[in-house]
Every structure is written in structure tokens, then in C-alpha cells.
Image 1: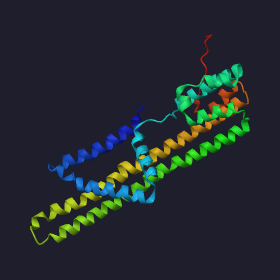
Image 2: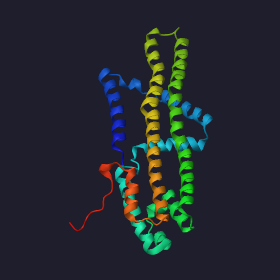
Image 3: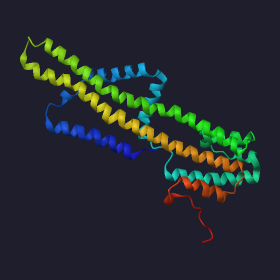
Image 4: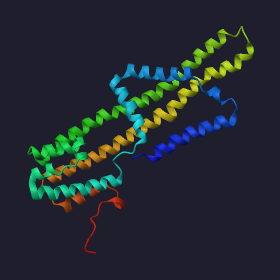
Length: 265
């Protein structure tokens, strides 16, 4: 599923910049410089590799491109989780742990926390132990994932700095050639400033916004994990589905809370 707000923001940001350039000059191709782009992007990536491991940086970049995808933590998704735990409660009370394991969907088997909850219940852990173990798994996952936003924020700090470095390099080259044709001085200065432009754009239109988006998705996922943990604690205690509904609905805003359809009406 696509996050339309993210897609609209990226499209609007890039579109407004391009429109401003095209409407201001006929020579808009002067804003395109492969060498400047390589200097800013390459130097930012290199500095990030010095600060963090290669695997961590690649995971952060992957998360950056995944921000266009909507997360699975919307209020509607949480409401579906409440409904699912009510179904699991009935299954567990009627058929025991074997029935609970057999009713897992493919998506639930691939979900690390859902799979862990079923595994712990199958091992016979009590609700207090399930809460502790799943809480530890949830916290460790949060710690690993939160590094992605930190890396992207760091890249957002590096990019403008390397844009300035590129500008300084361009100015040095330009000044070295001042003994030649002075008519090219303005053109050379404009070219030198492009790296600063690229650095600022990358930082404020890509790295920092996606860092905030990645962090927000991780916070929403942590909230979802809390609901799942409470759901399995209630399952292990063999609470009835109505109590599970009321307890887990507390995680959802009132207008989107799950309410079973009354088929008798």
C-alpha cells in the first residue's frame, strides 16, 4: 500500500522546485551537474560509512526508499488485530494450543512478534513470562530499528557540509583560471554554487524528512507491538473474547474501535 501523503509531499517538493527553475530561466540545464551530484552524494555516503557500519547504512537507505509505502499500523489495521485476537481467543478456548497453531495465517507466521507469541504459548509459558519475553523482544527490535532514523539524520547533516566543500573546490578552480577569459567568471561561479544547492536539497527534501518518517513508522510499530503483546498475555490467561475486545480497543481511538456486527438486527 502506498503512503499518499509521502508521495504527494515528494511530488510537490520536487515539482515546485522544478517549476521555479523553469519559470525563472531559459537555461535551466545549468542546474544539472553530474559531477556536483556525485561529489555530494558520494561524500555523504562515504562519511556515513565512517560513522556507521556498511550494513547499517544500507538498511537506512533501504528504509528511506520504503517511506513511500504505508505502514501496517493504521487505526483500521489495529482494529483488525483486535478482531483477530478475539478469534484466536475462541479458537484457543475450544481447541487448545494445537488449534491455535494450526489457525495461523501466512502473514502471521512471517510476523516475528506474532510467531513468537504463538511459540511462547506452545511452550507453556505463563502470562507474566510472556509479557517479559515479548517486551524484551519488542524493545530490542526498537533499538535496532531506531538506528535507521539516526543514520538518515546524520546524512542530512553531512550533505550541506559536503555541498559547501564542492563549492569551495569550484571556487578554487575558478580563481585559478581568472587569468583567462573573464567572461566565464559568472558561469564558473554559478557552477561552483550548484554543489551547495544539491547538498541543501538532499538534506531538507530527502534525508531529514525521510528520517522523520522512518522514526514515526517505528513509533507506530512499537505501539502495534504493545497491542500484540497484551493480546497474547490475555490469550495465555484464557480471557474471554469480550474482555479482550475491551482491553485491546483501548489502543485505538474511539471512532475506529472494533465493534462486532450484530447479526440479529
